[in-house]
Image (cartoon, rainbow, N blue to C red; front, side):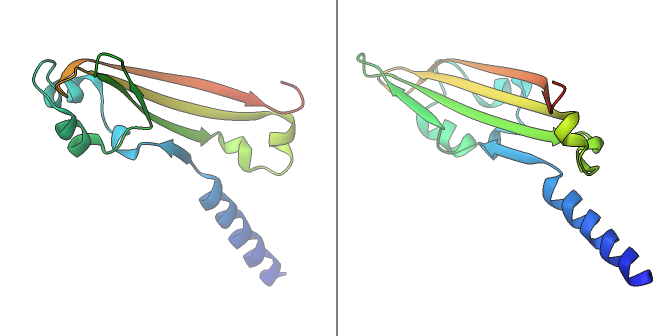
Length: 131
């Protein structure tokens, strides 16, 4: 009986560790806010090289005919509700909190930032048979 309890405890701990949080996108964007970016990126002064040093390579690049570019950085973190770890419950009543960030940086043909915008959102993702 004691061995079964130990096995069950390790199984639960393993499932909790593996399923705790999932992140995708640019990890450097995780801890950034509009305030921190305002201190680090200056429109009309900051360059592409400085943005790369701060955030790394963008997730998407859109080259413009004018010689400028638009860089897009994305980050998402999904955090499951505790009920996600109860067997069979997620199939019926699943919940995840989703934090999203998207930074759009516009550059002119001289590789200088002309504008940037950070969008942040938090959503509740519902899944399961009764959703």
